[in-house]
Image (cartoon, rainbow, N blue to C red):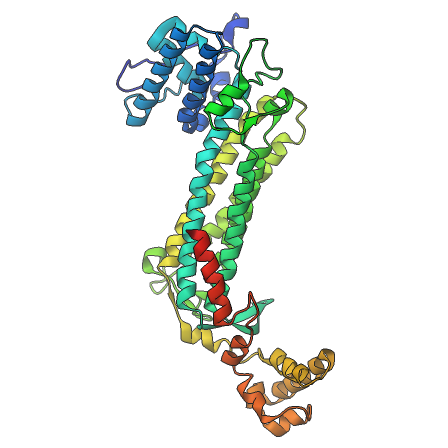
Length: 470
């Protein structure tokens, strides 16, 4: 592909950066096979940013003339601007984004441009570019996570008292509320955010200066480059620096866990959207129909997020497999990190965004949710705890409540439908006050412990989550 604007062949038809040792040029198919520019082009601005800092150091250290450094930096600024506005387009005949930018630079300023790579290898250059990319890409994803948590807490705030059955093993367990349930997902998402934050802390060292694997004999000032790029310091071992892809794997693992949470949430949305549950009504804007069944309203977007979770898992496994047998230090296998990592990032980023819009536009059937708390003997634990408050050991109380449940199963009724005499046949400690304590609403409100489903406990969670979102 050619380039628009300045010089149709600008940056094109340049020999590979490593060609000097070879008399013959590479086979066309070999070039196509090894080219990575289609994948790494998204780091063009990061590559330029790193090159400017490197050249600034070269000039300040007297390794290249100051006037050459100034000329290179000015030209790099021009390339960055032209890429940004579309006046300069990527030439896909280049081997990678580094080769393309260096080729354009040399086209524009001649011999001075050839000094940009002094004291540097593509091995430490790509390690830098990836870190620079992650430093702005990951916070963008974190912002989307915060937005999703904010949306969920707004919904939870409206439903602090909306009864909903809690489930274990997909069996009705105990009454909670929709607000409590949504807060559970918020805390998972907050941990996902924190894992990304933690991983970001481990890429705050500059790799530039590690060279191909052994640094350089030139008097490079690695610390100056690190300061200029906003790093906390420099990496401490050149072999480790160029061989390291831990950060890609760590972020991909965090993405995978985030996708696991989205997938689990989507599974609930899919179940809740069925006629059998009917807890949630997804917006028609975030549903699809059937090509043959006119009545269908399908939760396809939730299903797609659930399906794409496997894709992100696959990207993580690909990265782990890529490094599992690599000796120190750099090996070309490591070029394959970007396609898997960028795919994982793009997938999780779009899924968070889509899920946010899908859930924000949904409607909730509070009557149907409240009805799920009736039946299934979800108040049996409350019968046992009633007896505990009367002084009965819990294990004995558990047996009494189970006896009451067996009576209900035989009669096809609920515990609250039993007479006081029925309940007294299970234990003489039971009095008429029990009936006001075992309604679904009473069971939910009685659980006022921190982290519990009572409205005041949920309100505390929402306050904490909203403060975190801000």
